[in-house]
Length: 154
Image (tube, rainbow, N blue to C red; front, side, top):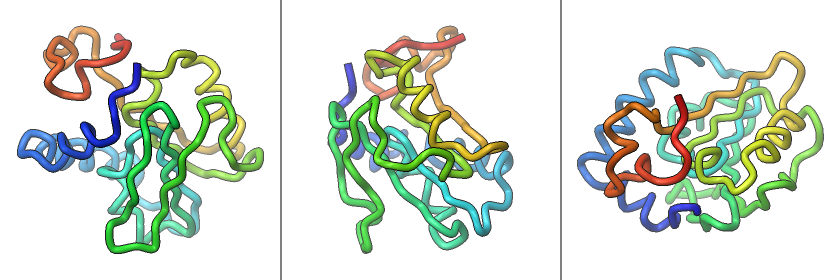
């Protein structure tokens, strides 16, 4: 059910993907204006949205589900990506301040289990932001974007 990581990478390198990245980065940054001294985990294909936090956060990791695949990020290294199982994130309990899930929850075969695992790694008072297609949105109806795959939400 996952969209392949190569297709996701190609989408975000195309003009529509670059525009999407710019628009969503603004929203994410508005909600998370200061992440100094925090640990941030991107889950799914969150790397297009993590760059603004790379120099600011204390720690940053991109957790990419095995069904989706993994690409090295950032391209200039050192790499911050790792391949993970849906139900077994390789992190201890309550170790992450913020989790950004993109192209993950809507494609997971067991989204409730994925959400439980995210809650497990979040510290008390941690923040979780999920980017999913809107069931009523135009993009959820087109399969030429990654937002046209998986389970849309309302």
